[in-house]
Length: 251
Image (tube, rainbow, N blue to C red):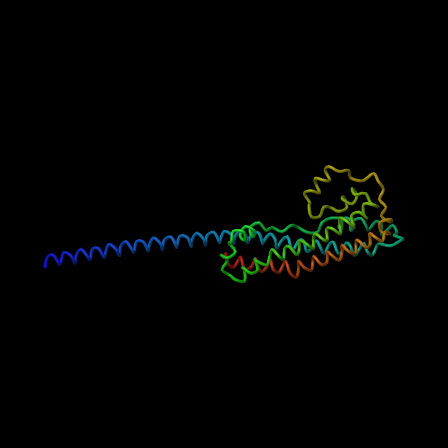
């Protein structure tokens, strides 16, 4: 009888030890899972914070770019009113500044490093908001569309508009008139290094009477209006949607 009780006591101890070991293993797994989930949540938040900073900068850049597009369109419209075979002194005097405006680029490069890193690492799946995840997924395609339009605009500037300008007006004078609107730091460096005027005479009347120049201005205006439209109706709204979604997830 005593022997049986001892055996039962030993069995209970064995069962207890097994339960303790099993519970310990389960706790260890639970702690590991909690730690992994916490670490993943922290990493995801870091990505979201980096994305929020990136898209804040992008929204500001897009607004500045859109404003610049409208300035370029307005300058082009002024030039179209001045062009013709008999440009008078008033037209010639009024042409320098808008010519400089059309000479310079009208866009800023968008930041995409944080999003590219997130996509490359497979981290986009960590964004648990389906709408935000979808908007982030659409951004690279939208950005590529905008870049293609801007590249085409700059092709018109460099291959059509600038060559006509250089034929009649010294490039130095155009650079001085352009104001380097999108690169103020570079402008100051240029002014410090360059002469204040060109020794060559500018033929503004010849430029304004050049039909190819007028055609180039028309194409520059057209593409610039398209870029502004895409920014204001597609790119900026998407960037704003992403930014609002990111801020909602971070707060």
